Image 1 (cartoon, rainbow, N blue to C red):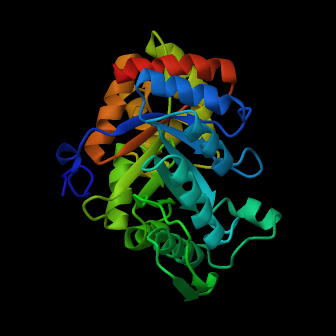
Image 2: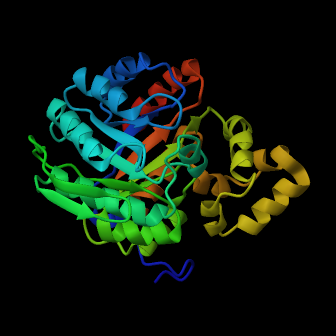
Length: 330
């Protein structure tokens, strides 16, 4: 155990460096995904993560478009709501994507935002059990098994994919709660962790999951690089304020959490913009290019396998941030 956190020591020094990529924001026009995919591959990035949130652009169709215009880029699905599709259809979609880009698909499946699931009449009374059944069924189908299940949510009768993918992709769980993390450690091949999850929170998630060797951790990280730290901090202070209204559970693992909440309560966004650099380094790759590199190195040491850099929500800024990805790759 580490003295500071009480968490298991990192296995990061025994792993290969994480794959670095970029996230395609849910609000971007769908047609831009091919432009972003081509540019990322040309710059040497390893991954593009497409974001599926209700009711924005759909992940599977975006992923298909990105795979069709690239040769090496791996495309992640972050993340498919477990109850939005029948698990047999989810497995069919993933297998089809694997046919377009063998070995280049990294699917994530999660609970989905429960308010959105209620809106579409798909909310399940037991999200953890449902996700466990869905991931189990999808993984078995992708391995080419004939699957019969009569679970609480999943009901399949002798279903088998006509063309199971080769190689079989990892299936990751996009979760954050303690029960869901423990479930993911039992039934999934890895995790997808949201932006704002720093190195300490990554270690805590791995401890909750009881992750075995080879467990793949994909991590989204909100990117903001500027020539001087103060400019980056001012730009990202409203984003951090959003994570504090109400406080995201992952922030509670920060060693300075109480001080952070107190600073925000008394000084608002201005207080966040002027908080210490080491605090920001736990939030994301925010500051100078060297600060961003330090954050990514810390994630690697915590055991992260894939990093999807999350851009600003406006397209012009996101295009410019593709240059920051290229600089980090260098």
